[in-house]
Length: 75
Image (cartoon, rainbow, N blue to C red):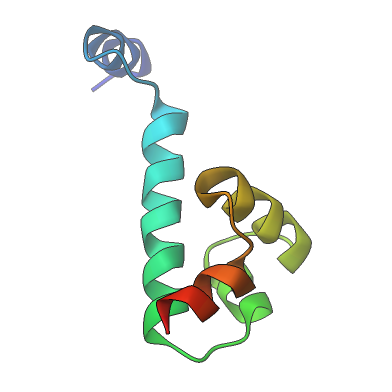
């Protein structure tokens, strides 16, 4: 599928590629925070973030909580 075709189809569904990517990251991050005791910095790197601070900012944007707050509330 070409890029333009994908963008057109996503537009018909009233969504964007970045929205889908962010949702996938959020779900993966939540799963890792709930199911593992890995340090948040390791999870950040595993998900492709350059540093833990960037991951924390993104996670807070997605969930309105820091990764630490989310992990503590899920326990």
